Image (cartoon, helix red, strand yellow):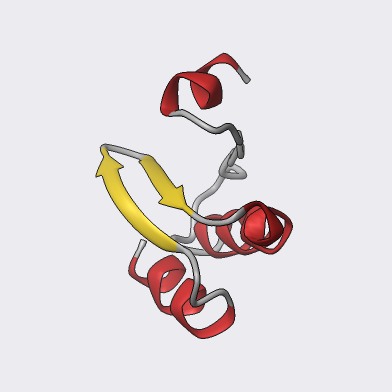
Length: 71
């Protein structure tokens, strides 16, 4: 998650991680930043740790957190 934070600050400075709950990250960003973030987060999370099985990473978007949970 630290790698995600560093990369977001460097590449999409208008976005920010606002909450982390267990293995979930909640980011806040303008609509124009959604596509770059949807690429950055999975890329960084998938390589965060060497595992014997692939790590599944999903991205959901919405205006509210509830909207994201529906996706």
